[in-house]
Length: 166
Image (cartoon, rainbow, N blue to C red; front, side, top):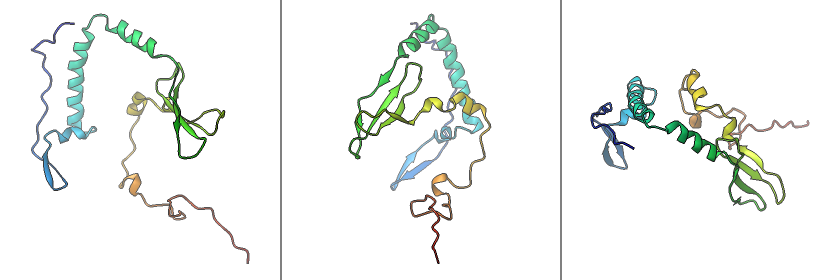
């Protein structure tokens, strides 16, 4: 592979003054603005970086064949060794079928029991689909600080209504 052209113009990253304090120490962070992925400046910088990178990678001969070969070779069933849980007889494992892009987290409830899916990211919307949809407005408070349901127990889950006989 040839060396990148030294004249390759990557977009400069703005360096802002400032930083943040953690545990009584000051840390300079001139690139903190890049943490805000929805900011127009950040999106423009990422797009410029991607354009330069894409131009370089697209010039590599045979790259499409290599990508297709890697994709074909990754299409096989995968299964992790069982991960024991605190509950006797229960096991977690990671599993993917030949057509899956991502591993699923599975639960086996007992010896000889079939694994049940707990998390299957293959059924979730793709990143492209998520990005193309309009994002909902951000709530005023993060979910973990949201008020609990009025009928919630101390665990935050709604309790079953109990009726008393008179």
